[in-house]
Image (cartoon, rainbow, N blue to C red; front, side):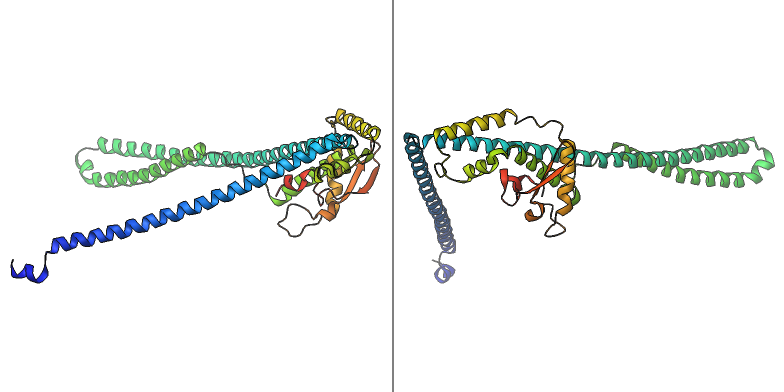
Length: 343
């Protein structure tokens, strides 16, 4: 054993042991992280199982409740009416959603078409201006080339002493012309490059609507919601449908079997006229203007009005007469109206 080994020991072996200890430490730390993640995932899955078990129990409870209602001869007819009213309510909701989505798409497309049309006009103006500038530059280049050829021909036509004494002057003129040619050539190339870039530019992407446009859309959507309300308002059918949608099954009794049969017939009659909303665009526009007259907003950045300020329903008759009634369709969120407004 050398003196160095006796003093410092076996250095490579100690370094290997130290590295092993470090590896064990980091492996243990990674294992602790993995264990923590697995434990958290296990807790999450256990919570999810509990939630699903609770949902299953609620569904089974609802099913048992519904079966009990259907077994009861005095309540079964009201249950049928409840589901028919819910169906009516859902059809109104889907019709309102389709109208709102179609209106938004039309207005966005119209706004985008205006932006593209303005862009095309601006693009045409740029192309025309660049074309004129490029034409002027090309004309200057051609004129300078004619002058250069003329100077070269004049230099070649000289002889003897004339060529000796005037050569320097003519060469200087030619050099000056070539300098201008380089300048105008570079300008012409730059104009051609810019012209190609403008011609190849893509039209602007579709942008979102501004607040005034969204407000106009919302007035039309509320006007259409009022049209639905007025159409189904006979015999309080709208309010009954909303009540049936908001309350649990069996919470409302609709009377005797005869009363329920009458309601079912009325629902079918309204359904027969459900899609007969043709030629109402002018009525909707007039109603939207009336709605906008009283609309207020919480801030300048809001597109949806304060519900209480649009709570008057306008029934516009064929002779132009206007009847007003109170119904806060937005505040009470008929047919999920608040969700379909433009924001």
